[in-house]
Image (cartoon, rainbow, N blue to C red; front, side, top):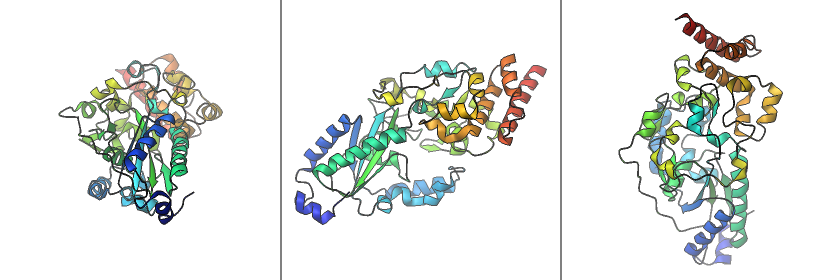
Length: 367
């Protein structure tokens, strides 16, 4: 896959690449041809980000994601993942789909809301394949040692992207761009090629706190700080076991992830629909009825979420999440029948959440 750095210097000149700026410009064109919307380049030093990461971990904001604590500062140290790395190439790809309006789905408590990034094909598969092609295209010009990432290893992706000029970190901790908003995925190529660095952008959030104010569970505890233990994305995707009862009412009809902080962001008015067909909604999941989703068998869940981000949470968490949403839905014979049908489910977790939902409807009916 790669020659040594000394070999490349012999092949490409004493600086590794004869005209670095021209080569980066060509990389940007190759990235666009592969479906990426932007590419930035920079160094590997994130040492000044380590204190913030350490403080976040010490506060326990990572919740049950123990792997984050195990990886520790490795996230900020590129050479721990690929020895010899001197440059990081960051890319972004727009995923905002042509789907049922998010606001309309959230306003209809009988429908289930799925985060817009998860409606189509698993982005890990899409981006990783494109990143590999980009890295190979670069290697065809200048052989290099590399490794590609897309939310697949301990990498501070937003930090790298922000320092490479792809946007700035918003107060919700996501990357923002004035012309594209925040509806995009990120990926990286770690390489031993010495490349000229792009300049970071100035932040443009100003005094705006729309994302903080909109969070249903108040998970954004301070600008640029999220307590994952309160975040609906964490609760519906990462959390194993019971969802804390005090947070369930605030989840509304969100059954996989949450987009509220992005939906209210003023910069997302500039977001454009994705041109990537892989991110188009599948199986009507952009606004399906909760009662219908709750009736899926394990086989139907596996079939209809195959190749999708939803598949990774498994059938039990899927039913758990929908049970909470049904508990928050208006009482109706159909809702009560759907819940009652799973009151003796094989899963203790599902039974507990169904019991909570039924009790919630009983309490509402009683007064």
